[in-house]
Length: 452
Image (cartoon, rainbow, N blue to C red):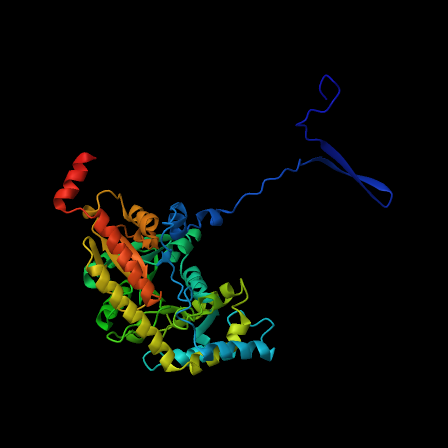
């Protein structure tokens, strides 16, 4: 007690606790009490979770030109404008699965056996045989990538990721305490991998190489010979491959898609895919991991690990699973062909229009839903970088393209080609007007630098 006879406010009492047993008193001695107080903090994992796209886009506090309707070429969602609906057969399959009432309960965390059989049958081929046991169903391709990373890498290890590349790889890895090493893609070679740079990054802590083909954000498609060279690096270094093949088969008519697992018998591969892009239903959240391991390098350990990790959320939506076999095996070929025809036409229009604009250098895509455009920044000296360039494009022309800083590749921007044709043409016209307004030739650019 203090001089006033009161307990100090910070006093922690010592309690002399006695228990009575059969009439006898037993002392437990002095127990230091605890003064409760709120101390709720976010986890370290949540603090390490960082999405560069959201961070950059959310910081672009810019209002579009109110005199021009907004054209967004930024979001890789093919459903936004309604010009690329899924096929009626896909929709009917979902309705029948729902109406049947057979898919309202829990499924095995890795998916129904019949659904895994359907996926295995769809992708099975002599060059890369698959059975149901080689398939793990997931909640979208993003969860497939997350599980694949989680089973292959420990905190403190590293993974090799393409630059430019899909930002989710880094977001997931850093949240798990996994280091990211970026290997270069070469725009002058249609975004092929710089193989020497790739191999130079491998060390004893490298857990896997991520290969994204066809590519987001580049719209590139690797040739068979280039994929074989990638596999040769993985084989020499004894490093498995995580293949992000969500855009598999979404290639234009003058190109051929080669699943990387069909080209190797000795490199173990986890191939991630799903319904989102090819079937135009990204919100249905159905993905899968295909395990290719003909030399039994993964063995049971990786398979068992994936099963255990899948139990964290108890599997993907059961109703979509109920429709999966019909979606895979009854969607008519014309649907795929028509989708690709629209994307190819838009890609050609966009590439031709942007190629004619001084100061821009688009790289022709061969598949997926994107193309990348180089900004010759020396001809736009009033802009510091691609982020400022795209901000001003929004404020002046109401056209929103993602700055490629989002993909670790400054001074480019990405265009999504899933919008209706008239919007592509209008957007390109506005981009041309914007560039002509701000373009400086060599002499003009030097004068502006001197003024600064």
